[in-house]
Image (tube, rainbow, N blue to C red; front, side):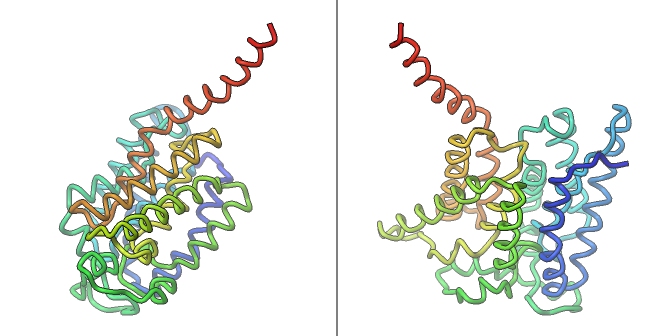
Length: 305
């Protein structure tokens, strides 16, 4: 039924410990969110690819997982279904299926849900460590929201992941270990991860040094989905650039956009916007990198005449 894709299986393996931690942290409701995402997203791709006479790609499983991990634990399940259907259909299948999409499908789906259902997407969080509590135990006080309001948040709690947040964004240690695994198995580009994180750190430090009133502390990069996006979304092999020089620029665009949106916009989280803007520039960056590489060779050839 599925087109075998080893790289996608490795991504799913790296996500498994994060899933287990999220169930422990936020309760079994997270499993319902993930189940709906997988069922609806896979069904949409299956129906379309069946008409084309093709198999469903295992990449859709990664899309469904990443989209679900970006959802608040107590988000209504119908929003999960609508968003993942949009992600697979509009951001992937409309372009021709796997390998042809311009935008990261999971990010496109999350951004669609984030803008369409802004109030629910920014409030349906549950307190960490409250396994089994009813769904009316909802809190919108995420660490990033607290920082934007001027309150301080323990860096240790951010590192350990015991905090309200989206399903997969909290366990920083597990995300870092996943990054090591993906880089070691050549599943993800280390340039994309390093450039995204480094640009976010540099711009945040620069804003603080400049005394910008709205500047967030460096700890804010451990809050929200910044690291999760840097490891799993920015490294999407289809929507990211292929040339090494272009990857450095691409990651820098994403990191800078995330910090700017978080700091100066009404949206408390800027990760989806950062990746979306980066996706739009990916092809151009590859073209520019190719031309820059050819220019010295052409100059040497001309000089030899």
